[in-house]
Length: 292
Ligand code: PDD
Image 1 (cartoon, helix red, strand yellow):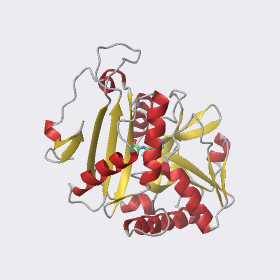
Image 2 (cartoon, rainbow, N blue to C red):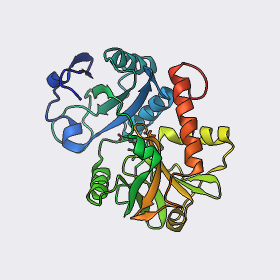
Image 3 (spheres, helix red, strand yellow):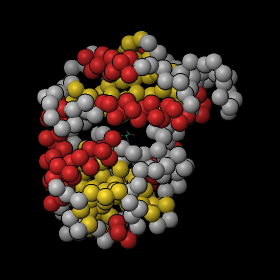
Image 4 (cartoon, helix red, strand yellow):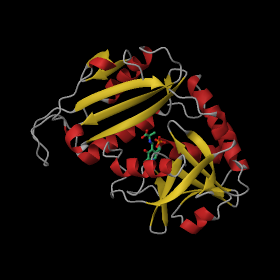
């Protein structure tokens, strides 16, 4: 993040340092907005169609008018990518309900605030891939609309900080006995050579990597099922993994300080990681799996 990078705010491109939002923006006052994080490989947004569809779903669930049509969004993302020198980037998009006198109920006739920026995509440290991540378990104390990619992220922020305070990279959360997800990633359980994922309901954000992981498992001939997963199934898993736009897929090798399986990234992770790299390369080359 550099102050001279170009960002988009309400129809204009401008240096980051000049971008300003009124303090009565409902994103600032109430966290009343939605966002997307889209990875870009070789200047091509990866799984853009799915990210755009999720943005539309999030806006629809909060009853915020979609400020742009599909071509408008794609044009904005392409323009931001073109304004920056990096081949691999990640685009952040945020839409809030807009600026109005403070009142909890939706104000009438206001225009959504649209902000977007692109940053260089951080290269994942090699040891995260070769050694894996330490993760802690936590109760899921968030609200019941985790399927909305909302900027109201206090539950996620507090959970991530608890992980950092414990010296871990992430936390994995449970509602009672049921696995949900991590503070900013989805969580995958490997048992008996197959990949398990929690149901895509209101208790988790359906990551764009959900569909991708399913495609990669199918291509690799790995059994894949979406179903409720218990804490015990997580604690006794052969392998654990997490995924997000910026983390791709990473192995979790320590859970609450104990080794997962033999404590090393496992064979299912290695296959999915290799398949993920091929999907990225195919997208960047404009062909093959995961091109949209
Ligand atoms: N987070 N679950 C939560 C709560 C998330 O915040 C994210 C992504 C995911 C994974 O979704 P996807 O595969 O579409 O990235 C799951 C982004 C990266 C963020 O907040 O920065």
